[in-house]
Length: 137
Image (cartoon, rainbow, N blue to C red; front, side):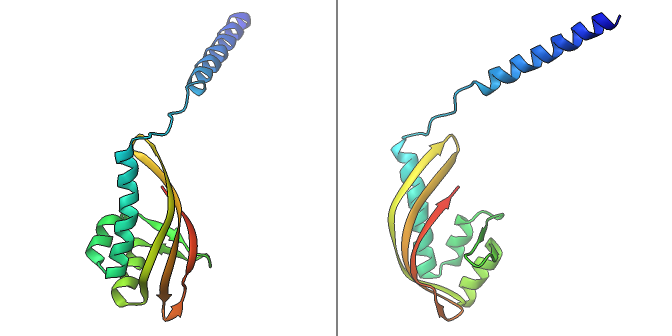
């Protein structure tokens, strides 16, 4: 009886290992080179900056996801609500920006964009201008 149980256990482990191996051996989806998708992602970045300069809260509300959050260089977490509130109140102001090169890779319905931006901005009256690297998912 124990011999039969051991054979079943070994068979189950081997079958599970084989299935896991087959799943893990599947090739990863290569990034899309679809120029329309890449251009659309880049355009959202440009539209976001333009809306910040214009103080267009409605446009920013459309661009940012409701669950969006980021962490600044001091470790403070900003949510969509706090970002929009700061722009609306004038605590945060982007005077101008210039995007550097932007690299976009599209994986199905997910895109990874990374680039740089040069900005003239103030935060609560303090000059926070500079050149920054960023990555968005």
